[in-house]
Image 1 (cartoon, rainbow, N blue to C red):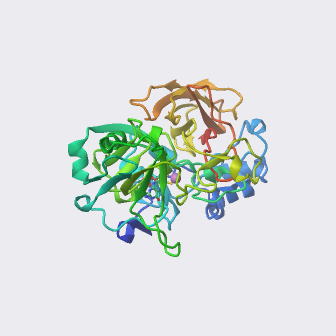
Image 2: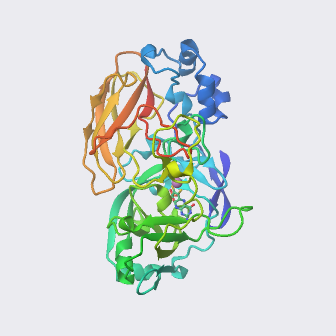
Image 3: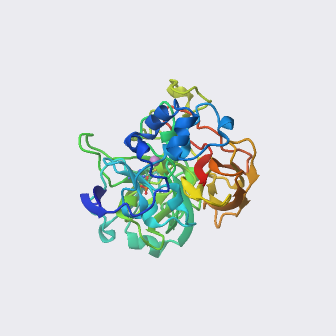
Length: 439
Ligand SMILES: Nc1nc2c(c(=O)[nH]1)N[C@H]1C(S)=C(S)[C@@H](COP(=O)(O)O)O[C@H]1N2
Ligand SMILES: [Mo]
């Protein structure tokens, strides 16, 4: 049993929980000291170990060791984090509260509500009662609106869709040198079933003026103590995306109320784009002509260099552009990394998604990317849902292997084999790797 504090509506709350869920790795006493380190620090310790030391830590031979890329570190030694919360979340930061699930707990086609990652930038509002909530739509509109949660469902068509949301910084923990921000491993992504109304329908009801170019969105959360006054997190959605029929103002998640930590009672869902666009605890949508320099929406935040840069480089602001669609990516959700089995043949499955686009293919490799085996890939159940894939992989024999998954989108873009460094630590979409040992 361990005690954990969670920030919910009323502030810190004590939750008693057991690490009931297997994190999917072999508990090796030798590895215990490394658990206290960050993923980046672990890599920097492990990369200088030779084959015998790595094999001892893994508890098995690594037969294809000589095919591994320079500086390779077994992924199952990198991602050894304890489950902190019931239902499987690992806490990445307490203030602001940030948590993610390990990939093998994201196996469901529809992510269970409690396994949806949590990314707060400030302190959630205290009062999230739907009865008292009001949403305003104003700025460059003919008729400003003030709506209650009940008004939304009464006045506009209600839709339910499975939508992928991913934090732009998901995967950041794999960058070297480390960059500031939440140190996500793989779990800053989810695909829930969201119910709500289309933002486009509200905007049409309000009548946007012709020079409206952006929807500036506000939430009711406050800044962390010591960070001054003002909104915790400002969002800006370009009009074309605001008018996309899949951009929703949601009031339900997986058929029930949205959880406090995920933005109750109303939140925006801007699928395929960084989670940062999906304003939680939504209170206002205001149409504006010019991009406002809201908090976290200016400077280098949510921007990528226009070109590939060497790790650790300085990139001038004018060479940075705002992130819109997220890149193609995949997750292996079964087996869990660290899986040990007597069978050489392993059933592998997972999800793949590609921002505004769809996934055209998923391939798997067990020899560090030399040969690739095509997986079976299902179409998305609706636009912006992730796609199921599965494959049967037969490993060469006993020992420790890595299985890598690489998705390719319908524009022909594939996941890179190694993460690409950038100053903000965004859009890390390198192949997903798991470790599997045949005993
Ligand atoms: N009001 C508000 N909205 C917000 C945030 C926030 O801190 N405050 N975080 C953003 C970021 S960076 C992400 S990735 C998603 C995370 O949503 P989740 O916590 O429900 O997973 O919400 C976005 N919307
Ligand atoms: Mo995010």
